[in-house]
Image (cartoon, rainbow, N blue to C red; front, side, top):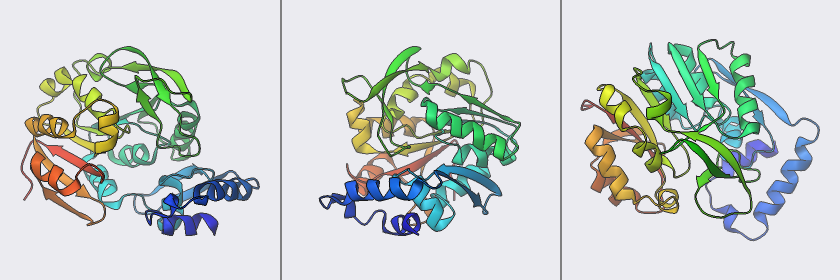
Length: 282
């Protein structure tokens, strides 16, 4: 009941009220003691997902209350995965990975945090998935290691950084051009809390090899700036790769926009997901 109510109230701005977040986390912890995990049936795509009930972010409460997460993006991932080789960057616990795996030939799922990665592996087994390769690694613009900031209680908000923070661990990172050199890829989904610009820098060769690749990018202006990427520059670089389609969750609609119109619509505070395709969508 608590998690379902939390899902309905998410996005109402209650987290800005003093003491609301600490109370939420305390109640969430107490209510999860009897059963930390729950398996949710995602009936829209015929998948199942084992979730951590201590997650105070968007994914778990939304799935518990609505049974689907970001319907517009979910349906687009489902449609574009058919018979393709897909890459899920920022796979988290496997919500989009399992959707991809239903129709794709092969799926690579990158997740750098151990706890999320173990749930990702469990969810692939839960769905009897045999065409997916989970990889404990982050994708960046270099090969080596980088610092990952751990956001307590919010399993989807961990992010790479070059700055100094207390809650960080070192994780392995690679460029897409290194780990998928010369490989034919049909779909890439990227949601990494601001490091999208860095990933784009490390996949120039992959884009040249794959002329018809489709890409879905999370667009979070504040997070991009935190990582040292100017949002309009990021949008312009995406625009050079293909047509930009706004996957607006709130409007439950898709519409073609220029980089400038994206910036006008979302400013520096709102976020969305962007589909980049090599053809115009009518």
